[in-house]
Image 1 (tube, rainbow, N blue to C red):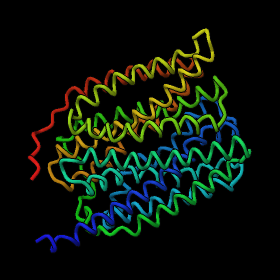
Image 2: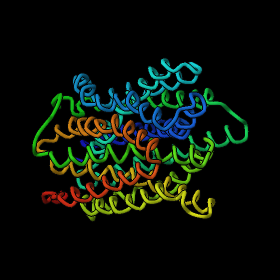
Image 3: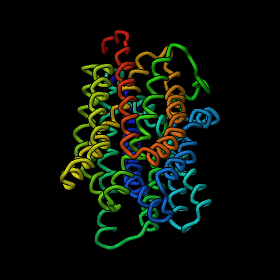
Image 4: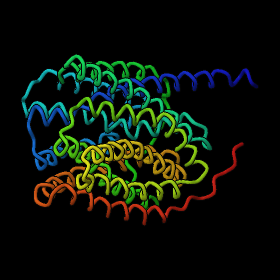
Length: 398
């Protein structure tokens, strides 16, 4: 009996290794892009807060279309979709590296990069859970997230060294990031899981998942404020260069290597409801830090408070896996998970496309604290709806 099952275990191990390698190279690529993008648009295009907010519409539009893109690719195994997504990330970054200060071309290739990055989000969660035993899905997602974070630390270190000591420009940084993403696509294309949700429905909309949809919507608002305006406080109010963000991402990555697996175990042991309520409470503190740090009499202390907020918020993004495992536990059918995750990405991008524009206008008219006061209200709503989570008893491990 043991001999009969060896091939399947070997296949699982091979796929897991290839998947984690792909996620590692994508993590390094993402670390290079995410640490430099805000400084890139500030330095090259000299955007104000209102224009920076409106830029999120084309950047986040592919996220809104994730469910549509995943549905149109329903005939492909998810490993193939992951490979093509990584390919789009790489090609988009390579194009951004060499287009120069051309606004229209930048928008086009930013959208290509974004399409790949956003389509990878639900696929990564779905494949992570597919490569785990049912009772340890949170742990497996934490392990894979930790691998990606460790790799992003390497990408950030390259940015730090290249820009701080060798005065490298954005073309070199984006070229390196694009090459790493192309390498990731090779690993993902080598995976062999031909039946990974191959028969999944193209789209799923079911009232049974209403709470998940609401949580995805609120996460979109919370996420986009901090992705867009958290770094913008450091850049525009405190004038921090790109290599500082590389250092902050390295700090977040070092902590994330330990935090993500612990978070996965906390989800398995304490449940999604407890973890998401804690996330909402901590988010309130981050909002206060971003909104009012500038009022501290000591500007050095204010800057360090913002550093803590930036790192802490990056760690809290990992709590999104609790929403994914919640969905997997309440799913009416296993093949509902992947398309519903894709729909969740689309839902949170409904607000991702609009909230930054509104936030930019609020920043220009009332100052940046108003943006984070409004986000504190979102955190309260997240706590209210998270308290409604009820997970059915899970079958014991066989």
